[in-house]
Image 1 (cartoon, helix red, strand yellow):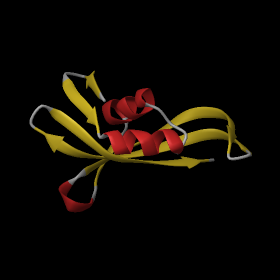
Image 2 (cartoon, rainbow, N blue to C red):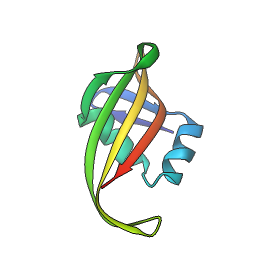
Image 3 (cartoon, rainbow, N blue to C red):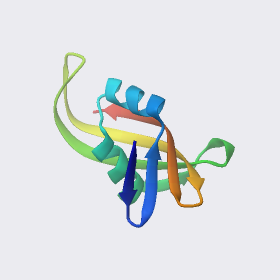
Image 4 (cartoon, helix red, strand yellow):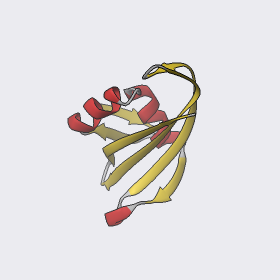
Length: 90
């Protein structure tokens, strides 16, 4: 999957997208996290992005107000390749 965000191309590895959906998030939230989230250094020269979203729903039988995405991406010449997406609910 690819999206064009803020002039930079954001490509999501198919496996990362499958796992993200299993973890309760979607492409729109992933792209918004890369575009507008807090940026931090990650392992192996990669970059992490973190952002909270209103959730206000059930996940695995428990109600949560917020979902936090942590997106790990590799910088590419024309944008970002999303390697993995981690979610936290609270």
